[in-house]
Structures are given as C-alpha cells and as structure tokens.
Image 1 (tube, rainbow, N blue to C red):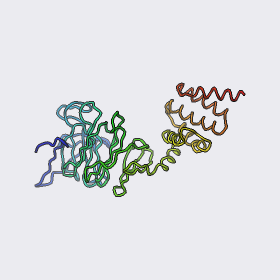
Image 2 (tube, rainbow, N blue to C red; image 1 turned 180 degrees about the horizontal axis):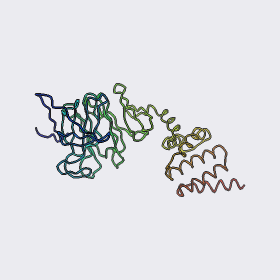
Image 3 (cartoon, rainbow, N blue to C red; image 1 turned 30 degrees about the vertical axis):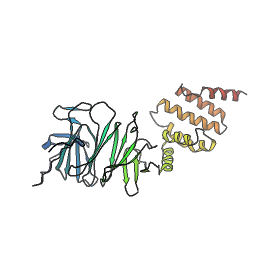
Length: 320
C-alpha cells in the first residue's frame, strides 16, 4: 500500500481473525510499552475506556526524538487491548481518542519552521483531517463522540498565531478560528448542535465560546477571575473601563487584587502592575496618602513602571 503524502499514515488491520490482546507494561500513568510492536510511548484512553492511542515522537531506527530533520514517529490504536491501526507521522504529540475510535494527533513536523499539522483518523485508520498550520501547535482537544476537534496555536508572526481552531471531523472543514480572550486552555469540551466549544482552565473554570468567536461566558469568566485573583482578568476590567479606574471599579477589583498579590512566586513586573491598580483605586476614592504609598511600593517592584510623575504630583498635592 502506498503512503499518502496528505496524511502520511500506514495502517494495518486483520480481516481474517482478531489480533491477540497485547501484554502491556505501564511506567507511571503516562507511558506504556507495547512489546509486540516494540513501541514505548505516551498513551491516551477514550472516555469509555474501549480504545487506547499510543504514540512516540521518536525515530525507532535512529533512536532520535525531539527536533530533527528526518525519521518518523509512530502511533498505534488499540481496541479492547488489540492493535487495530499502526502508522507514522513526522513528530507526533498530544494524542486523543474518542469513544468511537476516532483519534487526533498534533504533528510538529520536521525542521525549525513555525508550522505544524493537525491530523485526525477514523478507527480503521482512514484520514479525516490533515490541516497545515503556519504556527507551532500548543495543545488540542477531541469531543467524546469524535465529531469535533480543537487545536490552539502558539505565538508567531503569522495569521495562524495564537488562534483556537475548531474542526468538524464529519466534513473535515475548519468550523471556527479566533483568538480567545481567555488565553490558552488546558482542555476542551464541545456541543456540536449548539456550535459551542468550552475552554477549561487548570483551576477548574470552564467557559463557553460560540464557533463564531463570541465569548458566551465572559461575565462568568470575569467573576471567576476576580474570585481567584487572576491578573489577566483584572487587566480586562481596566481595558473595559478605557484604562481608567473609577471609585466603583476600585471597589469591585479590590478583593481580586488582594488575592492576586497574595499569590506565591509572583513576578516583580506583575506585582508592580497589580500595585499600580491598587494605587489608582485609592486615588479614585480620594485616598491620596494611601495611593502615594502604594505607587512608591510599585516603583520599587519595577523601576520602569512609569509612575514617577504620578508620585511627584501626589507628593506636591499632600504637601500643599
């Protein structure tokens, strides 16, 4: 069988008798060895537990993994412990498999160029998607029914940079492409009939976007971010207010600022920005002395913050 230059996959399936169940060896909760195929790699299970996808971003012949110019990685699909599909791609990462055996892989491709390929296959190995992307691939997600896939890209000087792309695997078309205000998610959930994708965060928050890029749950995201002290959300509130913190916004932001400033290992530049917001809040509420003290603390955290003129003005105001 010739290799397709679109999906670069090879698959094998017995039509006469079922293949034997594999005697798998696990190493922690992320690595498995499939002895009959001499493949050790990462694995992912379908939500119903029936299917397992195993992949390795390593050239078995050359023993090389990671960045390289040649030598394909490999993948296996197992159905109830039996290998039913075997194939190869250049650099395999982020494997997912659905309850019907549809599986998804990010191919990071050879060379150092900012590009990748989103690849999806049916349970019999047939290609469903091979979408080239002009940016590195950050992560992906697959619906439990195998109908939709999502991939988020990394930053790059291209139109594909920092975009969330949603694919309809039934038709193989790009259903959505936008930059979510929420940033990079940790996992994804889908409601195909409603054309909704939900972006899940590591802290437990999950927020919906429509396929046309509308942030359906933005209000809930803002409330969640204030409750957990997220700098990104505090900055969004300031942007929404045109960059000016008035007395009402200062009151709303205050609990979130306290939580954000209490976080361990906070970078000095982030701490300085948070202190600036606190100082502007004090100033908006007519608390000049408190504002001056916090501005000075912010300047110590980041001498390039740009508040020296404000400090001078407040000192003069208090002196007068």
